Length: 173
Image (cartoon, rainbow, N blue to C red; front, side):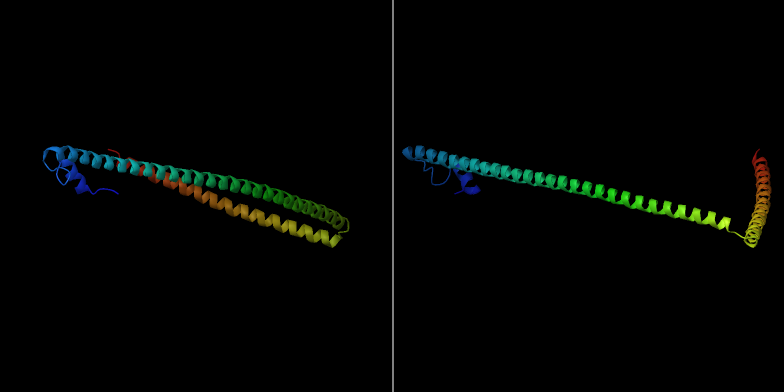
């Protein structure tokens, strides 16, 4: 249906079988050229309409695809929120159970320690006091060691400050 580019160029230039150059045929040739140009324009119009419809169809499909993606996203968001709420509830109940168990265990341990303190003999108290005294001595030894380290660090800081001040005065004009 579509004329070739060279055929259109010939028809537009007035060459070819449409124009014979003799009186009556010249008018018929011009009409023939008009119909060729008209046919070409109709074909371009049909091509444009086809492309317009193709674009509209593709746009519609893309809009439907976007709306489907949005629907899926909303569904996934709702599903994730439900999962988070369910996990929150499970963690809250788990934490409450653990705290209840811990509280019960602490109460039982406190009761047992009170009973043990009441039933503690003289030898047990003496061993406990010995452990306390030994721990106190260890704490004092650690404190003394840390005091020595702190004193050495102080002296080192003083020496560094003195050296830095000497370097600054040597570098000054």
